[in-house]
Amino acid sequence: MASTTRRRSTATDRRTALEERVLSALEELLRDGLTYTELSVEQIAHGAGISRSTFYLYFRDKVDVLLRVSGSLRSRSYEIAEAWQPCGPDGGADGLARTYEQIMRHYREHAALLSAIHEVAAYDPAVRDAWAAHQDRFVDNLVAVLKEEQRAGRTPADIDPQLAARVIVQGGGEVITRQVVGSDGNDDAVVARELAHGYWHGVYRRPPARFAG
Image (cartoon, rainbow, N blue to C red; front, side):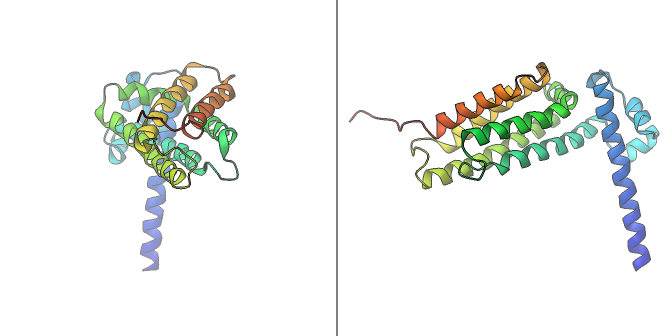
């Protein structure tokens, strides 16, 4: 039994290593200036040092590669965002600004990939739905945070957590993407600060609505 277990572990390790080579090859080709639509399976396989037939043992097509590599990109950005808590050790508007800046830094390391995701999402439903699901994860986390803050009396009760979270996540995501893809990053800290303070003062320091009696 031990021998069988070792063989299975070795096979899994080989599969993981090969998949990582393919994912790395895709990102490297994108960094070299090729657009995703220009890339062929042959180029990706060659970059990974494998044959086309081997490629198809592990991936359905090049969209499958993009979906898998974007999955790790999304997971890391979520981990960064989830770590921020309004009243945590690094809470408040300044802590949120640092969180936004970390997310920008993470995406900037993979700017070519981020650009490809948004290029393909415009016409491929699978990529578009995967990115939407990624945003929904951020929204759900923020809804939970806002509800807790309302229960604690730190956020006005008239705020709709679901709507506010969607506006913050979708609007912030668009700003971050444009910043990463379309700038050299010199003003990332400024953009992160403006995003954070817009969110903080809009949700935490907004006076409750007053209705005529």
